[in-house]
Length: 164
Image 1: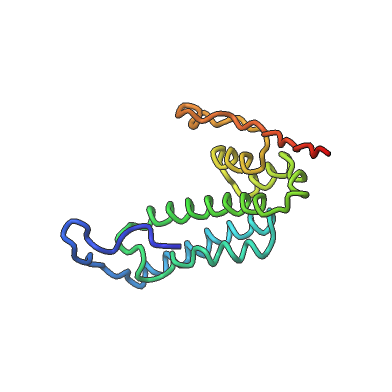
Image 2: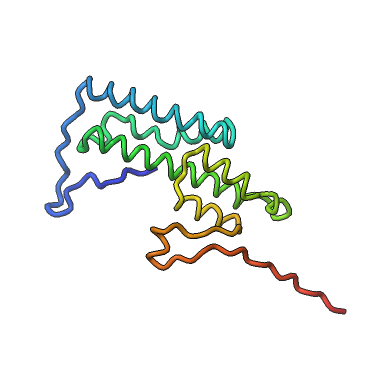
C-alpha cells in the first residue's frame, strides 16, 4: 500500500520537514494498531479464514512505520486505519466472488454474503458493491441514490444457441 500523501511540498518543491514521533507517541500508535488490527483479524478469520486475516495485517503494516504519518494527529491516524481496514475487508469479499470459477459462482447467496458483511462490519455502501459483484439484487443506499446510482438487478446471461 502506498502512502496516502506526498512527502514533498508541492508548491515550493522542497521536502517537508518531519517531526519524528516521540517514544510515547510511537508506543501509543503501536498499541492502538495491535488492538484495531487484532479486532479486524478476528472478524476476517470468522468470515473468510486465516489466510485472509494474515493478508489483512500485512496490508496495513505501513501504519506502524515510525517515519510514516508523522504529520497527522493520533485520532486522524486511527480514523484512516479503520477506513483502510474496512475497505480492505470489502475488497477481500469482492475478490472471493470475482475469482470464484464461473461454474460455482451461483453458490454465493445473499444470506451468506450478508453474514460475511455483518461479521466484517461493512456499511451499506460496501454491501451494495459486494452484491453488484455477486450479481445479486440489492437496493442502492439512500446516500448513493441521491447521486444517481441505481438498484442492482441481476443480469441474465443469455446462452447462445448453437445451430447446425
